Length: 513
Image 1: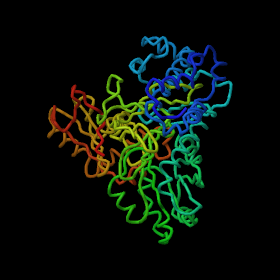
Image 2: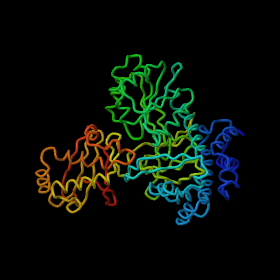
Image 3: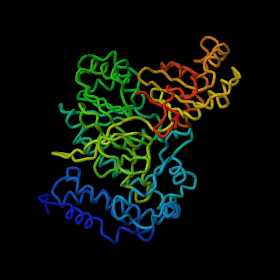
Image 4: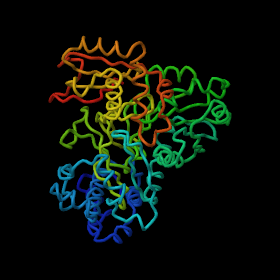
């Protein structure tokens, strides 16, 4: 079979051939364990069509992915907890079309915690069989720990798929120099943390490069790594990438010139930091690598001149949805929802990652064909101070308690609304409180707190809102080192300074880029 003239009907027929009817609804856990891997199906698709799956027409990709989604629902229905959840929403069989798929309720961190922590009751194949990996997240939305479980076999498949895609379509165009070529990461310094395992797993599977999982580095270590001959790429948290000119102050010109790709983690890198990087490293291109605990590689920026992120074909279903869980149109903003396609043993359907994305036109060849989207900001109530993440709910509770102790003013009693404004580029965090007597309350609080009192209030309160997996950062000195300024502002009731949604809701956190 060739791709010439392959239409929607032929695509559906090929998808049915790759995942036959008898595999859509396995009857037992043993049947699930015996299922051929989805990675193998993608490879078989490439053999049958004569081109790599990631370069296949979008109609074929969509047909095979939907066939896989049907199978994942069939697998999930074997699990009592998933079955109860799906039945509650009227889902009793595999979806007939994408409209039925979109009736499946969105999962959130609470669902993830219920499914994969404690008794881990959402696993289709029991943990006792072995062969799994537990990966931790900070639980930054609510300050509680969060874990997810993966089949090691399926995790290795996804590392291989995403690593190959990165090498062929992202790093390949930037690391063109003579061998050896290097790919470093300065991510997490302990391996239970998701970025230390899953992203490292992807990067270690990029063909044709030498991988080094460096962890946090000092200036001498960076200088040592950059002494290696050959072109280099480095992936780290946004703050770590922004710090490279300072860390690399002692690098000789040839070492600076060998740095070709700076990849930063989820979010955005301020323009000032981009300018500093490019002034210091004359040949560097800056790219985004978007990941999450539940998805080792959600999106890759393939071209430094365009902010669009491309999904890795065949890795996840990436949806950008409205408040009803339906796909938004191209150019519209919505909630980022991910379903891992390699998850026979530990399915997690339609998980909200807590990010806002703008849906962009798909990448449609020549070369890779993939869904694309653009980062628009966080949707969870999380305060990002550089790369430390604080639960806004816990931060407010701590601030309220300390303010009450210091001044006698209880925000829960005097404030009609509260809202954090995080000006991330200016590094200013403001807590706005709408009260009846803004001037009088301001005067009373300023008098009670005294000079520098607001700053002390924040630096003492914020550490307690860090999650379990960030707790080593939990001290006032670390807050001071962020370079942030802190403000507490009392505004009149119904003040336009407090931003509200079109239906009148007041989000707890507003990010300002």
